[in-house]
Length: 353
Image (tube, rainbow, N blue to C red; front, side):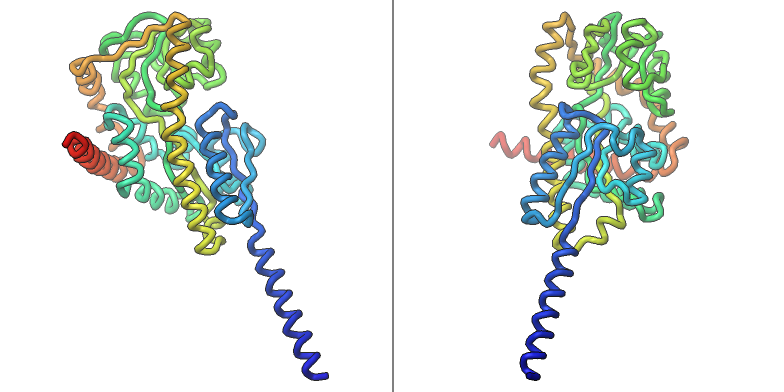
């Protein structure tokens, strides 16, 4: 009788333990992107979802909310990450600049030369770690930066009026900017007239002449059909890398087991690689469509690119003086870019032997 009782207690205990373990593994991550299914952000989230669900053998589910179902603006979405109603969110620098103004460092012009250098800076240096630590501190240990990917390639100057082959050609042009101080100062430094316009209103603003130009990647230009609004001239100056900042609630991340954390971290690594690759593929057709619509693509010479860079030198001092955390993050970024350039140069040299 005693043996049967003990056996029953052991079985009950085992069943309870199994039940508790099962409940602990029943995790659903709510991930959102304020974009659409044609965007690099969506590509990244699909890869993240696939990796995490497969690597966890289904123990971690990822639910995707594309568009504005959970939130519509950066500050609102990040508040959701902080309070736990949203687990994963992707923002541009402009979308998170209200809380973390220093992440606009990626918007500073002409600091990186190409994709290989940018990707090395984001994967083989401590730059992302620096941003993560700063964001955690400034959010009261609530919002964690998981990785930085790409959304749309590189920003290039495009307009409805004329070819832009040097900074002087931007003088007087009404250039659309986001409603943030840094891009407006950059436009002013180049002699343009900055005009803050919301993204959904840009097509009509180009069409009616409220603005005459913008700074965007080719995939965004074509997805929004800006040539139909009169956009004709595109200059591939590649002045800033269009970074995608992927955030997760710190409380949510720390509630995971070490094994689960590793799966999520590896999932973000896969996501990052997907967002690196996606614009490179999509821009092939986008450039073809732009030219077919009558668009002109101009590639500045080395001398013209140097003139662009020299013209925006005051922007660096402005960033250090006017942006909270500016000096620290700019120093970290410049050191990371220098390290990345060294890595890439060595790889290129080795590949020639």
